[in-house]
Length: 422
Image (tube, rainbow, N blue to C red; front, side, top):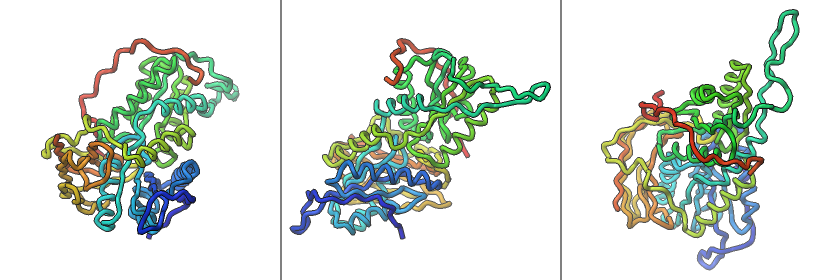
């Protein structure tokens, strides 16, 4: 049985009325979950801060996977607390498999289990200028990797990197922003938007992008590209919410690269973490969900493709993840009042076929409430799931004042697909 770990906030401002008894509106915050308990604790501490900002709400926290309570467990806690309406808000950076499939599937299953309960689903953080401002702070806080020492003739230690402040100018510095990566092109492109926005607020030679899983360029490729572009100093930043397995892998790979290039200055930054601006962003997502104003980007959704489109992807941690599954043979047709079948995480295969109609207010799952037409199309790209025949039919200035006026020539595009088979 799932057990919550302090994700609730309870106060006295009542605004729902159930059979004459007033109850508080209930928000269910959905994080990813990690095998690294410190990452789960960071998320729970963050949701406690959010709950303190909104004392008029009852706030519960749950996880998509790898931690408890699960989404089903979180919904059960909300209902045990008397909720007749549950506002589900994902703590996810970009819209991809978790927000397009996993969370909506859990909501659809809950609608079957609790037909009298209304579910209103919010949207991920997406591309925001406030996220760029957090990154600017993380650049200022970035730590120079430990000095590498070697033995010179006579047994003297030579410091190959130096301990003082960097003397390398911004024009010789490149920032490398690393995202989680997935097989959803829309989500992958969002990282590039963030990188571009960051670059235009700085005077660095360039801000490059890479991914730690599935998508290309990989982290090693990104580091090598910075060298090829003539960087004398590289500041490597993870675009991840909290610590976890991916953050550990990131730190290890960057440290290894730095050790292999002792003449190069390498600095490493931290996760976004519980920054006040991140709390502002989530608070805004909560408020728009409460007001029924949540909507998603349908124009660039890959699930507008024909049902015959085949694709492969992996399922890992969204900002924390780390496992793979294969799926096959799981189809659903979504209409008002209809959900779809149960989804198992395991060593099996299945595909998803989605049909959506605008009159239901969204695409792909049951009858979640959204303020506008929303295509919540699905794919498990962050986890390591491989699936087939998943088609969908849609009817219907922190120390920097310089700005770049022109871009350098882009590198040749990789002819391969964004997916990396495992």
